[in-house]
Amino acid sequence: MTAIEWLQKWYERTCDGTWEHVHGIKIDTLDNPGWQVQVDLIGTPYADLDSHRMVVERSATDWLRYSIEGGKFIGYGDPGKLEAIFLAFREWIEEKRVSHDLRVPHP
Image (cartoon, rainbow, N blue to C red; front, side, top):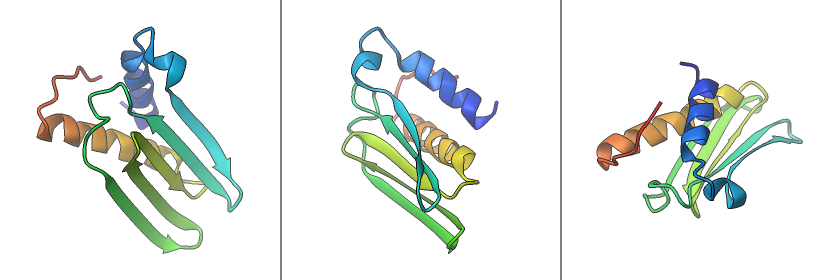
């Protein structure tokens, strides 16, 4: 399953008739150029888990950053990193689901 297929399933599973009216996923472009992805974690089992930050900067045109802060996953990357941001979110969710023994269905 690709990272985007996984994200679509995560979103579908997270929508419960209430969550999606207040929370969601935002994908936007940056002017440097690049991508920004925000995923609301409030209302999910992941909302209160520890903050995390990751930075990979190989060059001015090859970079990826993400953090878990304020109840959100926030990822940034160069124009070629949209899928990598989705994959970073997936890996964080899967690691937390296992390490915190969260009884959450997953795709």
